[in-house]
Image 1 (tube, rainbow, N blue to C red):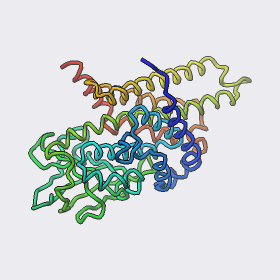
Image 2 (cartoon, rainbow, N blue to C red; image 1 turned 90 degrees about the horizontal axis):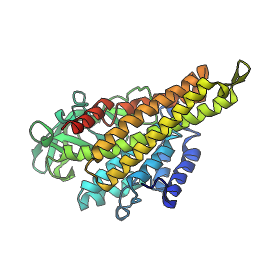
Image 3 (cartoon, rainbow, N blue to C red; image 1 turned 135 degrees about the vertical axis):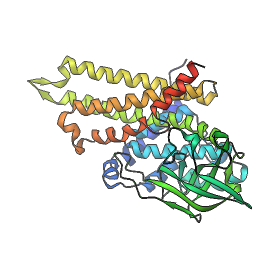
Image 4 (cartoon, rainbow, N blue to C red; image 1 turned 90 degrees about the vertical axis):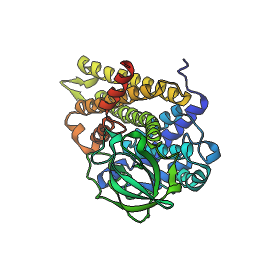
Length: 378
C-alpha cells in the first residue's frame, strides 16, 4: 500500500495541471455561456497524449494505467468539468476499439482517435432504456455484408459533431446476449441526429439523440463477436466510472479551493469568515470527504488496472461516493459564498451545474447501489 506517486505520475499530473491552467481555465466560462465545443483545445490535449491515455504505445497511445488517467482527469476538471468529461468519453471509446477491435479496425480508426482528428461518442442509452440498458431496442438486421439499423439513442455526448459512434445494437433476441457493439461512422446514409439539447450543465459539449433510419453499416464494423456487445459495454463503463469520478474530484477541488480563499478574504461581524468555528468545521468536512473520495477512486483504478475480481464493485463504490461527495462539496462551496456563489462571475455555480449530472450518467448512483448490494448479498 504505497500512497506516493511515482515521478512519472507526478509529471503527467503536472502536465495536465499546466494545460488546464493555460488552455482551459481562461475560456471555460465562455464555453459554458456560448455552448461552444472547443475542438481546437481537444486536439491540443491530444498532443500531450490525453486522447489515448491507456491505449498501448503500439497503437499511438500513452500506454498508461487507470490511476494515471484518474490523475489527469482530476487536473483537467479543475478548469472545465464538461470538457474534461468529453475527453474521458473519447478515451473510453478509444480503449474499447483498441481492446476489442481487430487489427484492421485498430489500424483504421485509432490513428485519428489518438490525435482527436476523429472524435468519438459512446451510444448505449435509449429513450426507453436507461438504467435497464439490456432492454435496448435499436435493432440491426443482416442484409448481405451489412446491418440495417433502425432505432434511436438518447443523450449522446458529441452527438452530431463526433465522427465515430460506438453503438450497442440488438442483433439477436431479448436480453444482454442479443446485443452487439457496432461502430457507425458519421456520414453513413440513414444516420441522423436530434435537436441539440438545452442542458443544466455540460454545455461545452453538445448532446443530441442519435437516430438510425434504415442505416446501412458494414458487418465488418462490429467490435468483438456478435452478441458480446453488452459485456463490452459494461467493461467500458467500469473505466468510465473511474474517469467521471475523477472529474468530480477535480471540480470539487476547485470549489474547495475557491471557498477556502473566500473564507480567508471575506469579513462579516468584524472578523474574517475563516475565524468562525462553524465555517471551519464545514470546510474541514469538505476537505476530509474529498480526500476520502480520492483514496477510494485511486484504489478502484488500481483494482481495474490489475484485473481484480472485485474491480467492478470497487468502481461502482468509487463512482457512487465520489460523485455524491463532489456535488455536495461544490454545493457547499456555493453556500459559503452566499449570494456571490450564485453569480456567474465567481464560476462556482458552473461547477455545481456540471457536477450534478455525474450522479446520473455512467450508471445512476442508484444503479451503483444495486451493483454493490447484488455482490454483497449473492
